[in-house]
Amino acid sequence: MHEGDENSLSQEDKTLLLDVARKTIAAVTAGKRPGPFAAQSALLLQKRGAFVTLHEEGELRGCIGYVRAMKPLLDTVVEMAEAAALHDPRFYPVKAHEVEHLHIEISVLSPMRRVASPEEVVPGVHGVMVEKEYHSGLLLPQVAPEQNWDREELLNHTCLKAGLPKSAWREPDIKIFTFTADVFSEPLPADSQGCNH
Image (cartoon, rainbow, N blue to C red; front, side, top):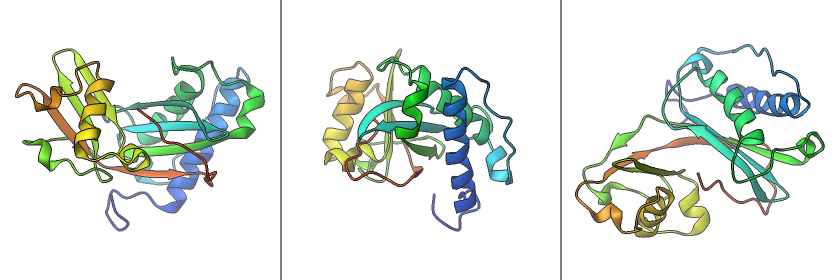
């Protein structure tokens, strides 16, 4: 997604979504219902997949998202902000006193595109999802450059994320999908790390 695309979020859209995510987390950690929030542009009413990533003192604190376009983007961000704060099984729920120390990042996903060959995967441009039988795993586009992974390492780690052998992407019956993401965040601490979702 590039500036100027008809599906590209404006800076105002991004600022609003980050504000909505922060207000949602502040509400739910205080035991309140978030919102209501009003969309200020039609793009926020489009169904889009999105992830909300939380960091605290440079460490991952939560990251959950919808891969597929399930609901309007504004609603997706509200739901995923709450989920990242309270329901990421890797972490204890965020407490109210932590909210001011959180750094919020949002990744709005493009539609998934199945690739015919692993050679089509471009680290740093594409996020990757692999599927095989009941297994699936996904890594966002920003993870590969943050970890200095090449294509093979990116595919290896996506398979591991799916609970598959790391070389499973070489097998003919695996499905590989790529996507891009419009990634934006609050002012970024220098030592922040990426979401491994």
